[in-house]
Length: 580
Image (cartoon, rainbow, N blue to C red; front, side, top):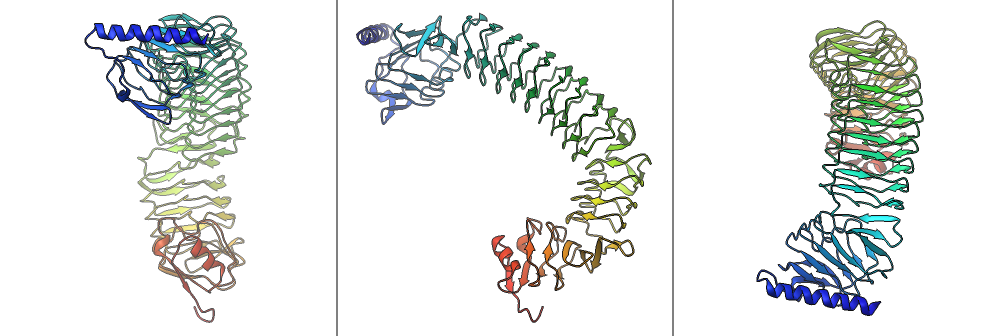
């Protein structure tokens, strides 16, 4: 067999050389046309159209011949063991490649963009590979590795079990593909960027459609996923711009991140029973999507799941869903009807940001959830009496809002609810509110008065970050959870500092044991912070990360405060415990 291979290479090399001599524009391959390091061709720098790899080479390196569009043939001699990733990427004139028996590893994407490569010369005795009409396959015919010059219509041979990674990537002339029942796996990027593929049936034998398997198939209009498929991996159909319909069977249990992101023509979708999470960005930027049916098996709608689905007018979220993560429906600018069950436990920050299509605000159909407020509202805003939940960032950037009336049924003012409401001067927080979240009133720079009722048991350290006009804490008389001492908000027992209003110099009283996370993040002008030796707990960031270098901590030598300052590169001055 080795004699046959050597003879074949000799004959073809002789023929190519003779051909080159007969056509003035071609030359035989010169040694100086290759950069070779440690038996690896790292780069081809010649101008030849017919290339013979020099003897002694063991490996053709990654991208070695990439973008050499004039090369028409390559003879790889016996002794070469491996072709690296992208080695012949976009060699669009390459027609013939001779593969020796020694070559036992060919990267899946070695011949991407070689649209003229119809002649892969592989001996019948090759231990690993065979060629069928220019299609590179495993010796046993079970793995289809690459078919760079696939015809417009192609039926994968029965018996193929695996469509390899990037097997048809960038095959822009492919318009029709038939996948037989023998196929059980479609690997990553197998058909990515097949720009003219128009329709697709995935057989029931396939259990998983892998990462970007059909991504950027711009002409793909319809997809039938047969019963039996269980998983659609991340970005499986991302940016299939023409896709108008897809049938997702009940067998599918996992639809992973961005599976249909950017499918701008997709009009309707049914999430089948068995899917428990609508994951990150699954239908993001599906701009034509008007109908979504969510099954009762879904428990959570993840971040960005339906972001910028600008044609979506209504959504019914079933009783099974208990969490809607941040920006899940942000930018769904046509939404007029949102049904949310009373049992909903969590609506994330900005989940419905930019979803007010008309009027002042977007409410759930049962009136219990205030989801978004038009940022053009001005003056006083009275939240409807039935509202129990104000979604995080509902009032973000309402620059002309001056006051707000919160109804008695609200129990929490969530993360960034009123952030950047720069004209807001006063807020009455009703009895019944238990928690004021991080940056709930962040950068409400005109806010002068907030009365914190006795029902509040938790206030985030940065809840009033950037509220430069807020000069004092106003607590309900005999507040059971908090007390104020100058600019400091502390626990009732005086053992922990929770937050601090703007001040240049602050002395924490002796006896305090803990400084809570974010306690001084809202105190922008702070230059000096005196911390007593009694403080033994300072975890996480107590300062605004961008301001900490402008504050000096003064504390006893060897104290927890000194350890914290050095660990976080904050200026420190040792303090004699006998004097502040």
